Image 1: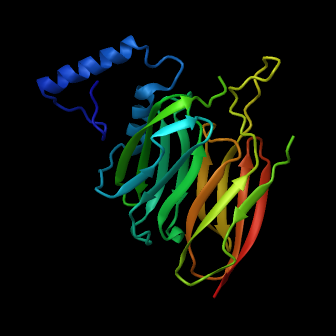
Image 2 (image 1 turned 180 degrees about the vertical axis):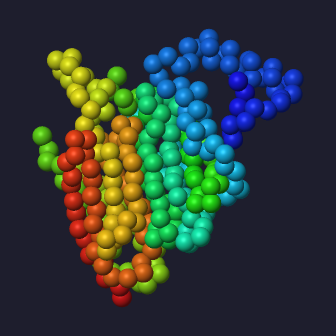
Length: 158
Length: 108
């Protein structure tokens, strides 16, 4: 039931357990899930991507607006600190949004020819939600970051 | 309907070992398969699902796009200049259509 970022089951303290039950019941009351992708699907996806790999401490900068007035065009840019050499480079960067009908937004595949690790694009967001970035390095390690975006007008065409 | 037209902004010249930013845009409606037209019929999914950047025949950067990407998808990415050559950028649409663009780069 309770998963860590690397997909294992952990022991948690009583205080944490109370907090998690409170959060999950709040989600249940607000009708989380349903047609929309929801948080469990995104965490499952993330667990799939990072299963069996170690987390790496690295500077990941996810540049998204705090408030998006129009959910049809939301800029998403990122920059990850990496030498991008043959032996040490960022292989894949996944962008996911947990409130969209489908959680996946894009997958960027870098190579050592890139020189640096940054990219940007524009995405659609149906409502206020969290956006996740999962970076996978060539040595199998990973790094995750997340940001909440408030969306005034959703961009999924109703 | 507007024609599907790829565009890219690449510096014409660059220094050796310089990291340049390449900006690309393709005019495309990116129908997600969820939007309804005026008659209430769902417009079928039709998106650009893959973007490839090749330099002198080597793959340097690719993106897998999903329906959550906005219409007229814009992508910018880095490239480290090691030699002169040509970029071949290609966009793949659902159903197998491809849109291509080539640009050359000089080293000064």
